[in-house]
Length: 186
Length: 186
DNA sequence: ACTCAAGTAGACAAGTCTGTCTACTTGAGG
DNA sequence: CCTCAAGTAGACAGACTTGTCTACTTGAGT
Image (cartoon, rainbow over all chains, first blue to last red; front, top):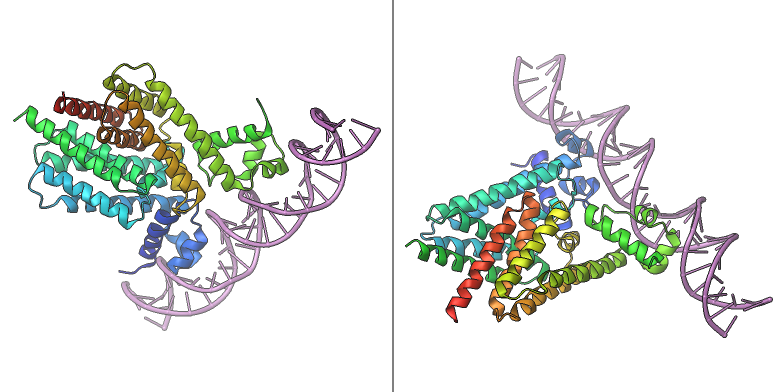
C-alpha cells in the first residue's frame, strides 16, 4: 500500500536511522519520498511530529522482531540465545549503527519532549516484552531485567566498537545468570 | 588557566553534551565562550575538529573518573560496587542524558569519520580500563568484559527510562557473575 | 623600539533550515 | 454533474548554518 503518508514514513525510517534526525532535512525527506512539500505538512504538523510517528513505527517493528525471534523456542536458554542472535544479526545488518530509538532520543535533551517521552515508552515496552517472553519459561523478573540491560549494552557497545564481541559477552553473561537462577530454585 | 582554547573546549563540553553536536552552532559556541569568531578558527580547523578535541577531553575525564571511583577498593566486589555507584551518580547528576561519547558518535553515521573513530578508541580504552581495574583482583578478562557491557547497558537504559533501576539490575548481575567465577576457581 | 603571533569585532558569502503561501490538477462520492 | 478533499509544483520568508575576510589592538620577546 503506497500512500503519500506511508512513503514519507518509510523515507523517514531510512533517513532518521542512517543520518540522524537533525541531519535529515525536510527537503531531503520530501525529495526522496516523492511527495510535495504541501502534502508533507498535510500529514504531519511538523518535523518533530514526524519524529514521533517514526518512533512509533520503528518501536513497534523492533518489538515485533524481538518477539518473532523468540517464537518457537522451547527453553529459557533457547529464548535468550535467540534474542542475542537477533541482536547480532541486527548489528551486522545495520553496520553497527546502534539502536535507532536511543539514537533519536539522544538528539533531544529535554526529558519532557514528545520524542523523548516516546523513547521512554518504547524502551519500557521493550523491557516488559523481555519480561513476558522469559516469564513463559518461568524466568524471574529480576533475571529478565538483567537480560534487558545486557541487550541494551550489547547493542550500544557493539556499535561503539564496531565489533560483535560485546554481543557474545552479553549472551554468555545472560545464559550464566539464567543458569544461576535455575540452580537456586530447582 | 583560562585561555581562549580552553574556554572554547569548556563551552563545547557543556553544549555538545547537553544539546548535541548538530544542534550546537558555531555562533552559540563563540558567544558563550566569549571569544572572537576568528579566534575559534585559529584554534580549531573546523567544527568537526572541535568535536574530536571534545571527545579526547571528555573521554580522558570519564576514564579518570572511573579509575578514581575504584581507587582504594580492596576486593573485586568492592570495585564493581564502586563502578556502578559512580554510574548512578553520573546518571543522576546529568539528568539521564546518557553517555556523551556515545551520543556524539550517534550523530555520525560513517564508521570512518574522525569523530566515530575517536569514539571507538575511547570505548576500547574504557573496556581495557575495566579489564585492568578488575585484573588487579584476579578477575578474569571474560568477566571484566561482561561488566563492561553491563556498564554501557546501565547508562543507556537508565537514560532511556529516566530511572536508576537498570543500574541496580546491572550491578546485581555483575556481582553475581563475579561470584560465579570465584566459585569455579577457588 | 620593533616585530610578530594572537587576540578583538563584525561584515559577508553561499548555502540550508522549517514552515507558509498561491495556484493548479485529479479522482471519488453524492 | 458538481463538489470537495487530497494531491501536485514551486515561490517565498526569515532565520540560521559554517567558514572566510578585512581591519584593528595588544602584549611579549629580541
